[in-house]
Every structure is written in structure tokens, then in C-alpha cells.
Image (cartoon, rainbow, N blue to C red; front, side, top):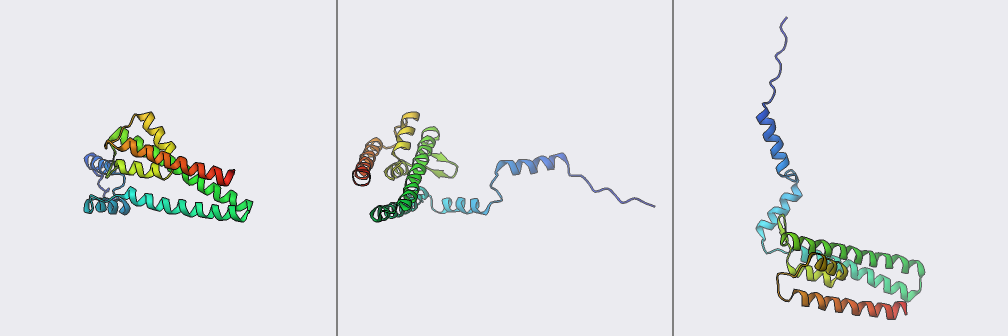
Length: 173
């Protein structure tokens, strides 16, 4: 009786090439990554962080509106829930703004296929990311690419301080 032939093993070079191909791009098989990469190539002036800011603004305005309705109706449970959502969203905005400032300071705003501009930082600072923005600016000594960046951040800080004063006066006072 004859034995069946053993299957041929792939060579070490073939194994190494396969391993390098997998290690070079961990998202190679992801269609979402390929689509976003194609989107950036097709629209190099696209601003995904601007679109993201509009979505976050819509959520934040909805939460603030529901909080105002809860305060007017005097329902304590609703006030607690909508306060949690509102301040939770503001906390997430501050963390995100800190991250954007950190990336801008360390790698000049370049994260893979996207580029962070000063307008993105200012936009999230205006959305109540003041604490995160100033923490990142002071910690990483970031001055911005535009000369008016710090002035815009100061203006956003003043606007947010005004909103905080209104909140304290009418809701806590």
C-alpha cells in the first residue's frame, strides 16, 4: 500500500509576507475604513469634525431643551435625568476637545487620513469644551496655527462663562 502524499508546507518567506501584509494595515479588511479613506481622497476639503460638531450640538440642544421643560414642570426625577445627560455630554465634549488639542500639539493635527484644523478646536471649545481646551493648551503649550486662535478660544470661554452665569442665576438661584 502506498501512503498519500503529504501536503506541501508554505515556505517561510510566504508566511513572512502574509504576516507583514496583515501587520502593515490592521484595517485592511474593513470596508468602513476603505470607504472613509476613499471619501477623504474624493473630497480632500471635507471636514468630518465640523459635521460631528453639528451632531453633538443637536444632541446638546435637545438635552438642554428637555432640562428646561423639566425645570419648568418641577419634576425632580426628570430634572435629574436631563441634568445628567446635559452635563455628561459637556464632559464628553471637554475630553474630546482635550484629545484634539493634544493631537494638534504633538503631531501637528495629523491623525492618519484626517487633519485637525484650528477651526475644529475652536468649534468644540465653543460647544462647552472650554475646560478641555484650556487644559490641552496649557499642558501642551499649543498656540494654534492661526494667529487669532487664542483670541477665538478666549471669546468661546467668555460665551461659555455667560451661559454658566445664566444657568446659575435662573436654575440654581
